[in-house]
Length: 145
Image 1 (cartoon, one colour):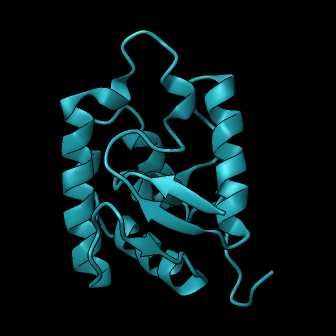
Image 2 (tube, rainbow, N blue to C red):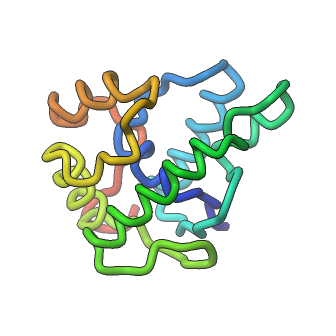
């Protein structure tokens, strides 16, 4: 299977520790984190993705807002520069251990955080990064599991 992600969720997955907007959101994200940790690939999409799914049934889901699309644009640019790969809808990515480590180093250094400005989770994510990413749910070992 493939995990469908919008660009800014490439950053969110770096610090995800099991906190979210609702119990349904967190349960869904836990399942996605497990799938990514097992090595499922990522298909980049435009707009709501697998992470957003539990929010779409609510009134006025924020994942449809223009500000979220702007986060996607900023994240895509930063991750594209970091990985020297196109980050756009339709592209597939393999989040191997080396790529995950590289993205986390850049996140810690502030190199891929433009999309995080104004996000309600920014402070939590910064603390997780500053602490060395303890208890993050997306983990990849150097060898396939």
